Length: 468
Image (cartoon, rainbow, N blue to C red):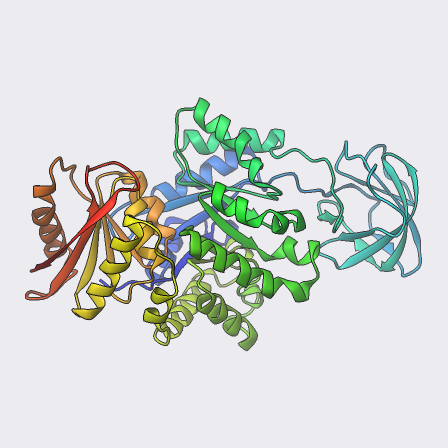
């Protein structure tokens, strides 16, 4: 069984809403599924999650599910039909009241106290751009159109570079989070993270529910870039959400921000996902553009753990072909990566770091068939992934949720095994699993690593070399 090291996450939606179609996507290379909690009723979102839970991955487990919360996104809430703006035209932007021939209503309750004359406003991913002429009231702005177009209800509204008082979680997010907890999803993605402290509110809800679901910080606000190191430290993983990030910051800065985020996440051993417009043209075309293929390859070269597609699979015409293209580009790109150079440049500060680095180096030096990590929490597998081993990594865990969680981690092929109590059981369990799954040839050596005492996170402290 051979796996691409860089993982693929697909968004479920109307274009891939049947078991046969989703199974085709798994066969083509999907490692995890995202449910976008921004759209649909609670019942519809629950139905999507249950649909994914019917599936089986190549390792026999049900798929990893990421519940992506909508967050406090500002949107157009009220506008006259066919409302078109021309360059130079005046328009009022209000967070209260009702729309009229000169007024657009956005998300209720937002105060414009920190917005000054000359501030910019972007609508529909920056396709429409306004500048503030005058503050008429704390909830009403008079604006001039810089780039015109048709304003539609539901489109996003951004205020780049301006601190607005917004909640970390909306009432809808809280309801969606409770649904995600009930349905036992594997990751929660928190949208529009601005600071490390944003994780506290979601942690309180998870703690009250007595669950431990890891949380992904979506980096899509300019404020998040100012607190990046603390955010990466606090959260369990990060996502470079390039859509809103490219509106909140100048688009030409997004590639540099992507590289910076990936580098810092790699250094801290936190999974990092690249998302938005990976294969945008394939929403309506059967083949990608050359620029999209180059973009995917560069994300892999940068060190991304996973690549995520959104509208391409959720509402596009070619969801299975999108995954096939991603898989091919991942495979071809990974053949050219110098993993040894990456490993040598990654820091080693403690025993777990040293053992993880040594495990990867020994496996390469001995041309081992694979590395086996024994893990309960997943921390050993995360440590090994950080050093980008050149050989396959099989993560064996008795915890089903850990197995699913590791599905988005670079280079890790997770499998569930029976519970074990003693370190003496490990070689027997490892060899039995490798043979049964046909993951290694007879006579090949493999390297086992893990932590003793068993089941204590962060105690990676041994490596053993064995032969099948």
